[in-house]
Image (tube, one colour):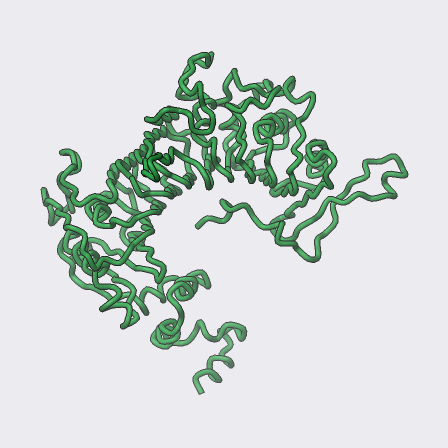
Length: 505
């Protein structure tokens, strides 16, 4: 009867009567879904956004202090497999007394802990610094600026203590920190050392965050920082960072990397620095303040053949704004996202575009996502110059975003692309955001020589709806016209998939 009445209501979409069921029934339905599927229901509509939390997270009223909430979370992590998972409870929704704030903590079945403070008050966020020291037994290392946590009205000079990791602690390998604010940053700092198995850290939408410092991250392999609009500096100290993804303003970056040595049969196997997986430098928002890029490996630079790692023959005015330093940081990655303006503003005078110097080439790079704001000839020249550093590239993604930060062209690339380099391994080029097919054809004409003897596969994503494939048309060739044009793709091959950094959160 309920389904029938909802179906016949004039205000109800007949294709979506389920969304108009009472919330308690929707909670019951969600409770039967696997956890990851339940979370994905939040993307269905605004109404569904928080239903999964109401169904799977226990509500905790009148929490007095953030320290109390942190202890509950630590106990929850310790007892999750034995006490909470059998009851299909995946976390908590905390509401502080007197309306001082609320947040959610949840654990996925794959060992990912998420702390989401976005439900709290977000207007006029107060600036704060976040200091994290993963995989340690205590947080007594905190310096005076981080020793005390201020919870506003109720809590002043309230010390946060951390506990020894429990032997029964669930192996939390991933931590997601969403909308951390000035009132919660110390609680986060105290919790992180009690997650000894942490390998991946994501920090997103922290509107008041102005400085992020991560020290002694011995086991951290993945760091993701997204959409923190006030961030001015990011410092990382650790080893084996296989994945670094950043989206936001260009700020001051500092990487202090050291080797981790493992003895094996009398030899030492060393892992250094940033390598193996991917780096995302989505800097479309441009610089926020004066920026620098400081990369300091504290090891002998024989890795990747960098025999002259400390050479000082660069003529750039500021070595901390030189692409030479940036190139050393991303040297071993397989996938990269970068903006044209950032490459141009930091381009080193000593980059040997006329030859493939092993000290400069991104030899392991297989996928490149290039972001620009326009299709000017000099902008394309900058791309072609960068491609000379990528001899083994297989897939190229080019996005034109009119909102991307721009800078006046320096016209310093024109003489460097007279003879474009060949990319013998290049298989696919994907274009996105181009104003019309004429501009797509213009870009294709500049890229076709890169394929050498390979059959060019260039596709275009038109207005985000469908794909077009560049094909050779015999009739156009007979008429003496440019023989290529784009045609709609009916069966999209898996080779046309998006870049790994696209559509993040």
